[in-house]
Length: 640
Image 1 (cartoon, rainbow, N blue to C red):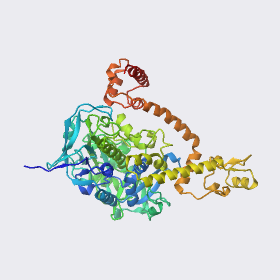
Image 2: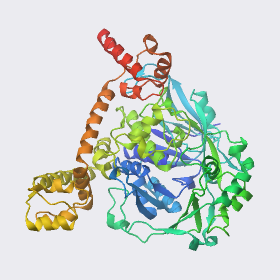
Image 3: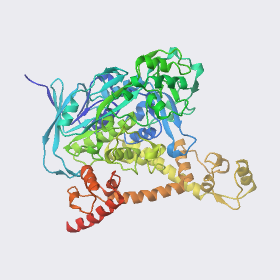
Image 4: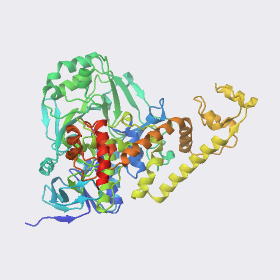
């Protein structure tokens, strides 16, 4: 019996948000790539919330775009409402969030994949990873790998030989969905699960764990009374996600969302039926996300709260389905209906799709290098929810980096590793591969130490150069970014050197703005540091100003107003970089360092950190251990 056998450069398993970014990156870098999916109709599927972006997640999407990824461009084409969150706070936590037309988002991303040169889409379940033993250490990585990738085999027996493999399986591995006592062995939205790949991963020595997530019900919008809810509108002036999108192209008529609340009656029904919840009945094995709890968890863990927010969001422009945000659940269908109907505006609602919890296999990401390559298997990369993260944006960010590094592995180039001072993506990946995460990981602004510098508004200025050097950003786009930076620098310099005197006209202007009078001349940049004055208000006394793009003005204002804080963070980053530059040799045997505590030896041997900086962030490794390690390394270098 003959079998189908093909040769490609890279295989990508899974076509969710991670797989799409990974496959596009590889194909755009000229490598023959095949992307496998259990259903072509599930490409870039949004099985849970109909949003892209949000607090800290908006930063990730902007960074994906700056590096040459696709998510930002795709949501700009398919959003139905857009809003900049946290405007009342400082620029470090401003985050863009857009409601998506789910079906259109998936359709447009599929079209991008289908039109991409060097990329083939294949509907098939990958059930086995093919490897061979290898010897010697990889000079581009930190140590010796036991095996290397040869290819994959599908359930139907086809073999695809490849030089690198990227796993982006999302929530499909050994998936099961739970709705009360009803358990179905399917992936999200009733799609086919991937039941065979987990066994192949285990046979390769890869450690798996069981996580869970959940989603709320979808309602027929025609059965909802919106008059009892608070209407939520998008921004009047829409800012696109992609730095390449013309702002004029995204000023659209936006759909509305609505806000309502649970009440004591809702909570009583939930409490009375906790014994029928798979979570509290002990049926669910997996650990759920702390920062996206089910409504059952909210009622139990926050018993003092009289109500919880419920967001009613459209799933798209061509459907009546509405997403009931804030009320994910795994309670039985009859309890769900009774519970939802206690919420103002949902008294007569009809459920289109029940809420459910989903359990799935994922890996312990500490088995990965920061490049997202497995430490023990050369050429095997992993991205997205398989790595124990949650969220579309976190998945896409990892997929892009995994794709870039798989391509560079095939081309014999060093991996691209973003550190914590460069990007939210760097924080995300460093947290995953360095820290012990016992629940699905979610990105938050509080996780980024240098968030004043890692803002969503300057992602292009931070990362375009890397995208250009990798080969995913065109010379034209990169030049436009350099021109933008030059305009910012020149305008800041002009404002610092333009001094206005204490004339009556200027004093009257300052008084009208509620600002203190001048005792002597002051630079415009100095005046801009006053909270009540902005670049726009100073226009009245700045007669040498030339028109500038809005995004340039935004950067000028932030750079001047926060100059002192920015300088402080830059100094902190210098110290951080010194630790990151202290490399740890690949062949270092931690058991030889007798003065290291046993726990530190065990953790360092397991993680194989690339640098002293990474070693210092490992749970169980103390500052005293780091001091011992640094002294040992000095002696080690002397011996070498």
